[in-house]
Image 1 (tube, protein in one colour):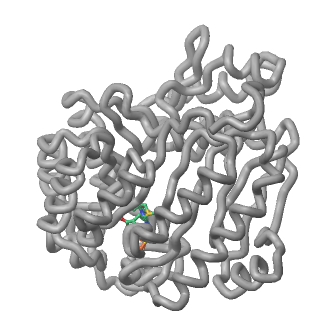
Image 2: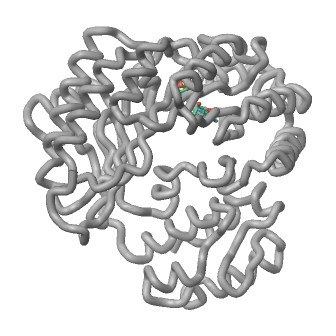
Length: 385
Ligand SMILES: C[S@@+](CC[C@H](N)C(=O)[O-])C[C@H]1O[C@@H](n2cnc3c(N)ncnc32)[C@H](O)[C@@H]1O
Ligand code: SF4
């Protein structure tokens, strides 16, 4: 419902649910094995935190919601319904473009899915990673490929027609054939959206420890890059638009929430260790559960730190995010947003990377080349002032 007027700025909302069935071996997201007492306390604090933003965001209207984690589908759907009801009462809403929930195969059932639908959720992101059960076991996933198929068909039966599947490449024991088999089967299911991430070996994870001690075999860098480029081509041939480095969508199914994030539009994150970008500031919440809970319970926002985003930083972020998009940096959008031509700050850098074939340029856009997709870090650092 609209409370004020049409001139309000839009914002997106990210809600973090840190609970999982167990920790996967590669994961360093803010997530941990669930405990029912923690869940109740956390969800009531989340509700309180959202209420605290009612006045602060009175002049904004909410455009997209993303419930991520952790594994939001690992807690009872009553919590999800309640939190969404609170959001619908607290924030100005004219038209909600997209409401996504992340779900793990094996944690869904028909009633949960019906509850999600009743609560206004219209997009589900299923974390699959691979359809090879040996690989799933090797990376510590709780579910099998069969669990995934059951969850997927249940979602379809209950009327979900905007489903993302998360996949990973560069996994222990994964071959190009394995990856392609997974992709063929996912394409056959006609999913609307696919995220394909290269495994990042994060400090502090079990996989990192095993890798450092020579206990697991990972595809080498050349094979990993081959996997990426062959996947991009396979998905392109099957009508999936490659619209961001790691994201592919059927026409019209690009993730609206993430697009707003990549375009550096305002967003609020609530919950443990969530990040926000609002009022020319970037701020982030407490990362320890006890600190988050105690802040909210003493009626204070759980913000742990903040950073002012000055114009040159905003421009750099806009360019770096823009380069991740296949549409690239759009020069006319840049001019409209920042009131200056992109050449003013970046002519030399653009020239350098066009010369070494990492970016290509036409009259209105600057886009990473195929070589640039593999070496994007080298381009990005040059955009930082
Ligand atoms: C927020 S996470 C978790 C969503 C959900 N809990 C799950 O695991 O299915 C979203 C996705 O990030 C990807 N991811 C997590 N850790 C990663 C890592 N170390 N390297 C690359 N991708 C990773 C996985 O594909 C995962 O599905
Ligand atoms: S990958 Fe997903 S399910 Fe696994 S620990 Fe991380 S957030 Fe939890």
